[in-house]
Length: 74
Image (cartoon, rainbow, N blue to C red; front, side, top):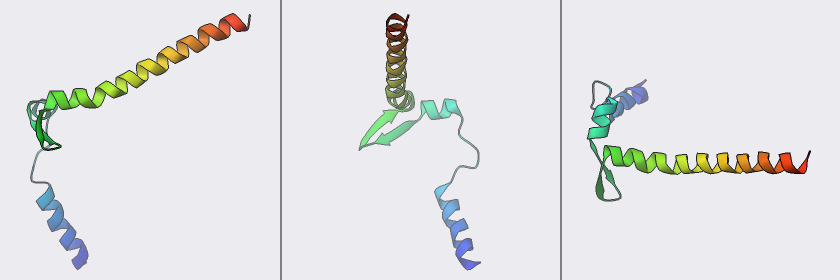
């Protein structure tokens, strides 16, 4: 039981916010990334842009596959 009591104290120290952070607050905030400060909206773009590039690339490969298969197999 004493070990679990210590974990509660650690979790209280790690989570100082009493309310959840809204998306608007997260976007307006700044993040420390590799020793630099990055605006929240720029951080979101940096995360989502590679995912979007991969999804568009895989979609293009799928379209090419369907076109080639339709021409090869009549």
